[in-house]
Amino acid sequence: MSERNRDAVASGMAITLPDGACKELTVEWARWEATRHVPTPQPERQAAVDAAAGVCETCRVIDECRELAEVSRYTGLAAGLPYRNGRPGSRSTSGGRWR
Ligand code: SF4
Image (cartoon, rainbow, N blue to C red; front, side):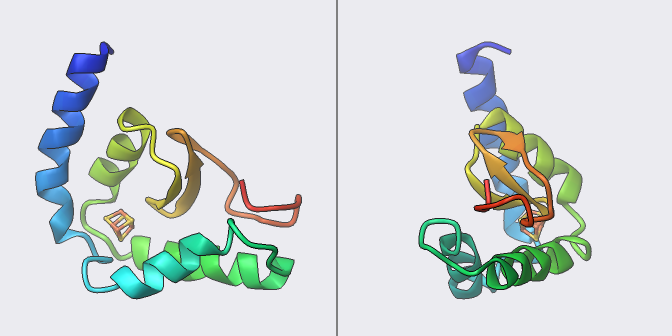
C-alpha cells in the first residue's frame, strides 16, 4: 500500500473508531500504555496488557482497529495486543519488556 493510500485508509477508519469500547477510557488507556516506557515489574506490565485486551474483547470495531493499527504503524495497545510500528506483538509480557 502506498503512503498516500495508507494515510487515506487510516483517516477513514479514524472516523469509525470513536465507537470503540475504549472511548471513555483515555486516562486508563494512557496509563496502561505508559507501562512500556518505564521500568515496570512484569506482573504489572501483564496486568496492563490484560486490562486493555479485556476491553478490546468487547469492542465492536476491533477488526477496523487492528487494520488501522497496522496501516498507521501504530505503537501502543490496540485491538487486544501491543503494537510496535504497526506490527502486533505477543499478549504475553513474560519474554521481557513489553514490545
Ligand atoms: S479494539 Fe480496543 S483499542 Fe481498538 S477501538 Fe476497540 S477498545 Fe479501543
